[in-house]
Structures are given as structure tokens and as C-alpha cells.
Amino acid sequence: MPIHEHSLIRPENITAHDKLVIDDVDVSGHWSTFIQSRVVTDYNEKLEEEIAALPGGEYIHRCWQCGSCTNSCTVNAVNPEFNPRYWIYLIRIGMEAELLRDKDIIWQCVSCNKCTYACPRDVVPEGVMKATAHWLELKGHTPKSKSTLFDQAFSDQVFATGKIEEGRIIRDFFRRTGQPLMQDWLIEMARRLVRHLAVRMLASMGLSALVRPRTRGWSGARAAIGDYVEEQKAKQHRALGLSELIEQAERELAGPPRA
Ligand code: SF4
Ligand code: SF4
Image (cartoon, rainbow, N blue to C red; front, side, top):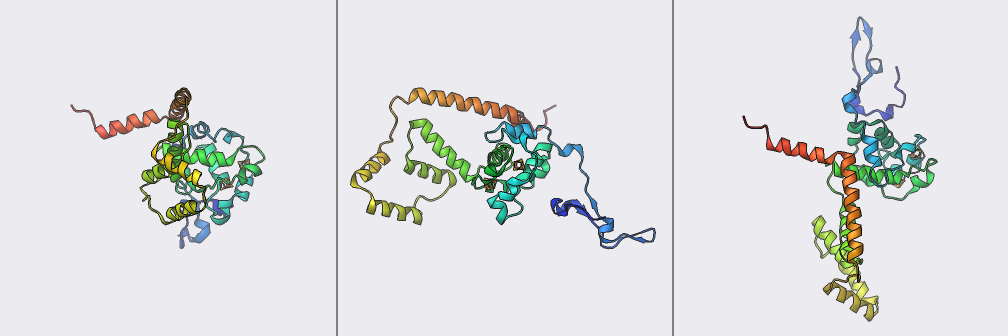
């Protein structure tokens, strides 16, 4: 029997015997094809809730699987394996194991938001991709991506000083990602800045490299932002059951209790 939508089934989940005869009947090839069954332990019933608890994932429940997001997707046009509609489907039915097979490409979303404009249900698929990439990091399935490390370098500086100072953010980002500071493109950019920027501007940039600029009276705002960030983190940790996961990992590391 032919399998409809064969392309949606992973090759490793399909078994077919090239040569098979049963009771004198030749059932070779697609006549002996079967699709590996799924058992209930493959499912994470809370997966949709977990993604919905992260920024960007809030409207995933609205999806009606029309496929407009995948049809309009910039990355899908060059890599058909990148399929937002399919991942939203997997998340909504809780197929975590299946989703994890694509964990190394989900982060490739370039945030062009074409999917968001195409979506008839206001799911904000771009947000769902971000939430899913974040979920993968929080659950330890993937290391922190460079964009997450950049966000952290940026946020840490703004929280600390109330200012955005590009030079320090780039230095901090390079340190976090283990990159050398002296990179050809950066040296060239600095050269051009020196050539074209007004002296006053250059002096101000040089000064801010020596003395960290701060917003006056920032401490109150910093405390309020800090409280909000901690509150959001605690909410996300609860939704994803991260405390239980950490406790379980600690128990496993400690080994069985001594008699
Ligand atoms: S376009 Fe929107 S409704 Fe359609 S599959 Fe994508 S997310 Fe779901
Ligand atoms: S935002 Fe991401 S998922 Fe949406 S169309 Fe662009 S690359 Fe594709």
C-alpha cells in the first residue's frame, strides 16, 4: 500500500524488506512496508504548556495547521527540513522525542517575520521558534546559542548601567563566545570610524571606553527590572519543571544512598 505524505515520515521510522516472501506471496518492497508505531511514553503532555510559558510561545494554541508559515519561510526555501508548521504540530501533540531530532536546526530562524505576517491565526510563529529554541537551551538539549549570549551581554550591561555602550557589549560578547578581540572586520571598522567620525564623537567614545557611562538615578529602575526578571525566571522554571530536573540530576550524580 502506498504511504501518503511519505516525505513527512522519517526514513528511520519506515521498514521495508527488499525481498520477502510469506506463504508463497511475494511482499517485497512497499508491500512489506510498515511505519514504526509510537507508544505513549514518547509524549510529553505538558510540552505545549511549556513552550507557551516562554516569551513568544503564548499563542501557539491558536494554530490550525494551514502551513502558511512554512510556505512563506525564508529558511524553508533553502532548507526544506526547516518546517515551523510541523514543529508547532509536534509541540501541540506533545511529541518531544520527534521535536528533539530537529534540535540542531530550530535555532536557524532568522527572525524575518514573514511567517508572522502570513499567519491567519496570529500565532506569531517567529515567536514560537524563539520560544522553542529557548526551551531547548533551558532543558539542556542544546548549548546556549550565540544570539542568546549576545542578548545576555546586552541585557547585563543595560541592567547594570542603564546605558547601551556598543564597544563594551562587543567585548563582553567576544569573551563569552571565546572569540579574539582583534578581528579583521573590527579593525577595519575602527579604522573607518577614526577616518570619518567627528573629533567630538571620537573623544566621547574614547572616554566611555575608559569610564563606564551610567544613567543617573538608575538604581531604582535596576531593582524593579531585577525583580521582574527574577519573577519571570521563577515562572518559567516552574512551568518547565527545571527544579525537579536539577534535583534529579543531583541525585544521579550523588549515586545510590549508602547502606
Ligand atoms: S500560518 Fe499560523 S495557523 Fe497556519 S500553520 Fe503556521 S502557525 Fe499555524
Ligand atoms: S521568522 Fe523564522 S520561521 Fe518565520 S519565516 Fe522567518 S525564518 Fe521562517
